[in-house]
Length: 367
Image 1 (spheres, helix red, strand yellow):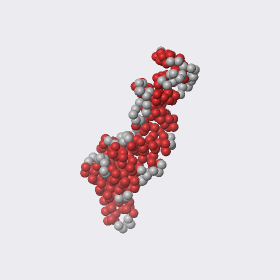
Image 2: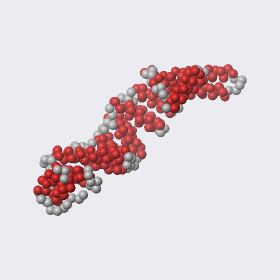
Image 3: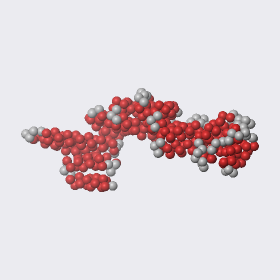
Image 4: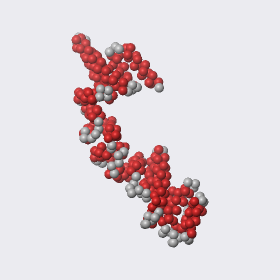
């Protein structure tokens, strides 16, 4: 639908209001077109405000109407409203537009249409700028993430920078920001991670640390993983969690002895800690298997050493069993844990207990 450019009269403004109130939208659109085309009323912010409002209503029944035209007309109304007589009305209309663009942006994002989503979020920010003193940070994040997922990395970067400057407290912002600068090969990720620690509330700081640290550990970026642990030492990250990742660093560096010492530190703080008990159980099991392998490789005439290594292996299995049982008490349905526990029992010839664990594993696998 296109507004007529015929010469306007002031009465058209009044008529447009009446038609809009009566939901006679086609007539309302026609007469408001006269009003914004007429020299006497085209400088009146109310004409443009009504044009925006009418277009928005028409768009609900006519899909050919481009909703962004409503936003453009509202922007003109805001510019002409120098005395802020229509400030409240403009803000309310801007909020309606913003809500519309946000809904469409979310729908497009969830459908994987990230370019389209970023366009809608851009319009939402433009709408917000007409009713807020500054842009909404949540919408800014949605826009930044959409651009990033669409592969428009350079376009996304300034929005992440603004969110960081605004000290936005959502942990995912800094995680996504770090991924972006990694992709762009920008050497500022550690500063971004530090900034995240300073602004994220204590309630979420542990989760933030786990996600950031795990990303580098999983990707075997050990040097950066170590740097993140050093950063976390000066934050409110809880001690057992910090110790756990410090132990994982030692394991990544092949320093099993130091790793075990740290896991035992955690257990001294919290004897039921799942992660420390699980890791120690796995380590003790692996060392047990190493003793058994060494025993099997001995020459037949080294009987005494054979039984000595076997005995050490069995001792290690017993220690592994204790830690795995404690871990299982915290998380009883972990199949990987149960399978290791079953093997420790088998090597100690605890066949009844072993069969009980086997039945539980089979039940879990059938679910």
